[in-house]
Length: 397
Image 1: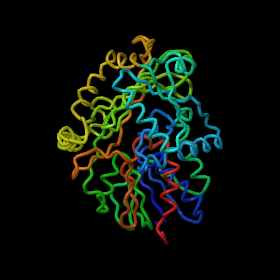
Image 2 (image 1 turned 90 degrees about the horizontal axis):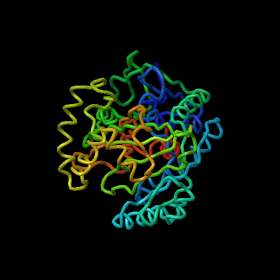
Image 3 (image 1 turned 30 degrees about the vertical axis):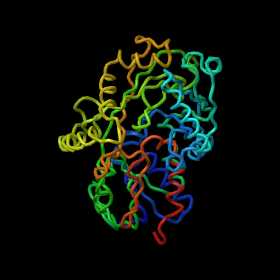
């Protein structure tokens, strides 16, 4: 069997690239290989569903370039396909004088990225989100929103098929190279391979001799859903993040259905798919994490030890609630008892520089394209990332 483009990974990035390829090049034969029996089983179906606005990222980064555009494209897609978008907006609150200058930095960075933002005071915050508390000032982002990630992925998969693409479920790619892939069902001749394998993207890239310096360092995210009535919490409420690490801290978000939730954590995971206990645990992956983690802890680029010290206690429900109470004082432990589906962040680590990759990483390879780091806001930016990748598609492939 021969196909023009084989995409490894049926997450939102893989599907978005298939969708855009078929929009621009409708005569191409495009297959998406997804190893699970259904879509949305990993990060694309387990994320917060937040449509980010784009103010966290350095103006010269790919994240900054794609997030604002991706937000708009995802909203257009949801409107076209009948997926509801909740226009929550987001407030970033401060907890001390020390965070005020970092809040100002966020504001200026957002303006440089073309994002609609406003610095507000405590009285204005009380009008926008009465449950939130801040120290003197806060940041208001009106274009942040929320949508159901599973609904988005389902509709995107349907549009890929409507445009003539083929989504092959239960198709685990065992090996690949320039011009071919081997799946659980056999060998295929391929014109171009797109590696959108998420948690396994570094492994696939090495089959092509790409990204040898990278290793995946997975981080587990846990959420707790509240029993509050819809509309009690109206806005996403976030703390000011630590700029040295690519995590946003414990926050409260409003899901597309109006439920409030607390999370996520950012705890190093022993395996790429170890969502619960020893389920999904791989000895080989655990050993690889054990070898990489000390280099992260010793990195001068991150405050890794403080991150670990802050994150590990969040396994305890009471500690996570106390963190959330600093943002929304009315949070009570008995109100947030339902666990959400854990997610695992496919965070790339550069072993040559001993640092986490803070930006997206996309690399060309022989007859292949490799999306190595598509962490948050990867869900928001997927359609914009696909447009950028397809706009420079190799001639003749």
